[in-house]
Image 1: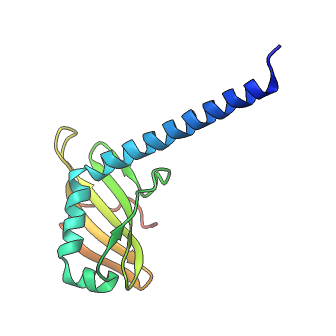
Image 2 (image 1 turned 90 degrees about the vertical axis):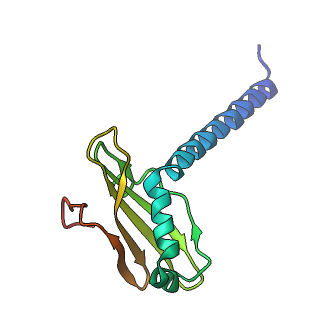
Length: 137
């Protein structure tokens, strides 16, 4: 018969390995998201936009994309939407990055960048290529 202490050790080992695996899987997806061209382009747009810097307040901290929010964070065949948490010394909120591409083989191009701050909603970049599917936000 197996001792209870052995079962506890096995369960603890499985828990530690499983939780470590989940953590690494989540980090891997976050690294992939942060390597997307439109993610990096949007950060460059915000960091170079004087009114955005004034509204948020430098230095700006960028958070992790909430992967479970499928409404605000997805990559489709020709559309991508990312909601990135941003925090500064003046205000905090989210940066919505909306990107499009012609075909699946093309890279995404940033079409619109919006800041959702406590102070209001600001569109700081818009090429006109993003078409809203519904009026709900």
